[in-house]
Length: 380
Ligand code: COA
Image (cartoon, rainbow, N blue to C red; front, side, top):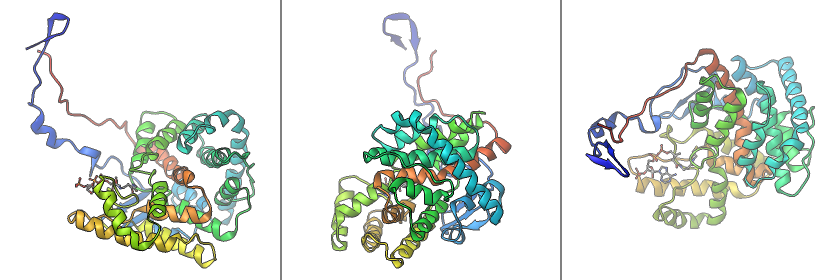
């Protein structure tokens, strides 16, 4: 027995290893644990297939708009022209309402980091309507970019689609069709992706009966981490640091030797190349075909091949391929968004999935309350 310091009458047991054997039953990282039935999306990591509400991601990205995927996740079917026009109008008007709040949220936006600012600004929304939240996240993210660049926010244009107006609110210029299509392809691609960490976070919060904004704010916090949505900025930094294809193997080897991970490579679920990487690579190629390029696509492809090579040698039993973030970096850079805004732009797309999961959780779900294995001391 140990005596508690300062109180000889209270004793606790010595540290015990009694629980250690049952540690094997702990599902570290909840890997393989199924926590919800969903009709929203399915990730097949062995075959590299992503289904979004009944459609392969390749059949959606580049063919439908962000408004379409919002409707698809909400209703289970792709909208007709009238339904799409209604949604474009509703989102446009909601962006105008969100911009009216900018004066209130500017202190949050003036903070240094895009995701911290977005989290703070979104937290000030007082609504349980997904349209208002989707609009708010895009207006606040765009306004952050302007404020960070020392410029005034650009007022929304309610006539435009969410993708076109987002580009316009960030750059201050009316976007062309190619850039808008590329951003639509991106937002559609990232709209939902199974039980990823931020979606799980949103569902946990919703499962307690809490409100939509709380779910989305919590999800923003989860998305921000470099193991989830925080990788594309560092991917671009990596491409800049490498500079030329022939420098890639040595640079990547040095990165691994110093104990760092290669950003944009590897995935918890995928054992093959993330299908979203291919979709975004293709969308970036379409931009190049329209004459819009930063010259980084060829370098990115060479770095991806080199990274696969060095990772294969280092982890022969763990397939490590490009994930969504790898070509997110190249695509968002090519459409003209600053790298500091990449994760916030991911949030603009993923908010569609979060809102749909919150609705689904409210309809079918139970309080999410897993168990833990106590490995501490037990008082006598
Ligand atoms: N670079 C180098 N090594 C990597 C790696 C990467 N990008 N991704 C995984 N590995 C290695 C790990 O170091 C580990 O090696 P070890 O067994 O010798 O310790 C092994 O592969 C398994 O990794 P693990 O941490 O179990 O995988 P996970 O499923 O928990 O991680 C990610 C998945 C996405 C977090 C991980 O691949 C990663 O950190 N990628 C880089 C960040 C990134 O791109 N994030 C965006 C994800 S969409």
